[in-house]
Image (cartoon, rainbow, N blue to C red; front, top):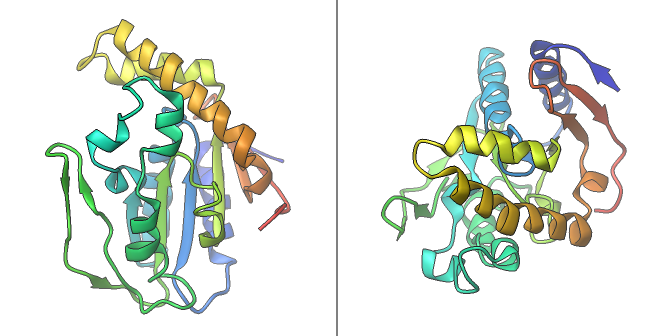
Length: 227
């Protein structure tokens, strides 16, 4: 178990990425519940890797959403809809994870969806150098559709109740407290419980980051179970 400040955590994560020996880009998943701090951690890790001279592709699950009509076909507050209907895993594998994998040609696209316009995107493909690191954040990244695609699996763990309070602060300007709390308690938190029951992500992670106190994180390296 590791215990230290933020800089020590980032050094440990960068070392874990640097220890991966593959002939294709290293694909790093930063998984965790909404408002757990995974986007911030992924941004910070990408910065450290760039400072070390690595080429980094920074991407997110939010750019692989299905259109709104599909996402909410079971209802805006459906936990099952959040887990089963939100993300386009086929496109994520096809345009990003497979091309950067062992059998890929490294020609990738980092997005297929634009949230503000609810529109499908088709940006031009880019060729990644072989020593590139993909740092990818999002929810549900260790589920069966994606689990075999990651060379480093990081899970950011935070008490689910704490994510509600963080979300209220983060989204308070655009939504009422009641709306944020309802969305978290009816959709996001139950969908995470469904994820834990069906996919057991913490059993599949290489590193679990306990992020209740982001400035004094605790992390645990694990031996992989399963694929």
